[in-house]
Image 1: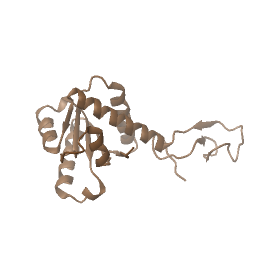
Image 2: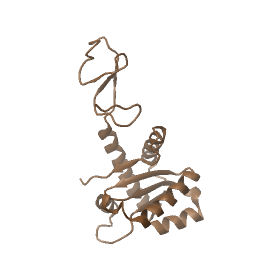
Image 3: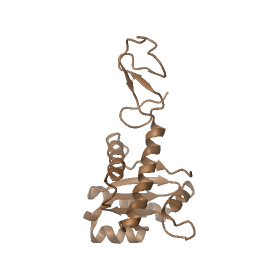
Image 4: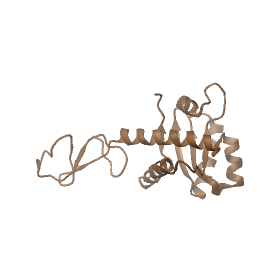
Length: 181
């Protein structure tokens, strides 16, 4: 049984505050007299955040508010860290063993934590390349910085809220899987 307090890891529909049970219909102990709380399903909420992130990245790219690449991102964060509102670190399972990439990620995470920039780790490099229209080119998509996208405040707020809730649950760099559609 998976259980969550807040935003993560629940796969059931109702949560009983009295007997702390989770069910699809009624409380096994209290029946229909139980004060149920409808609990969001994680997959649905993570899917929602994934879609919001994809829309945010597309809008930021269209507005010229997206920096792509580890080197370019480090250069921008060194020059003007106050303009960065989100750092996306992308890596698939086969790239987890790349020591140089992991060192870059560690340095970028430390810098983002120092200046209060939301960080999100994503897997699904193929989907990320499709979203950004980089399918044909071999480009470094391992680090993306979003800088003040004016049109997509709500999408940025959704992604930022997800990052903040993850930090409250001691998941300092939340992981989000982008899936092919």
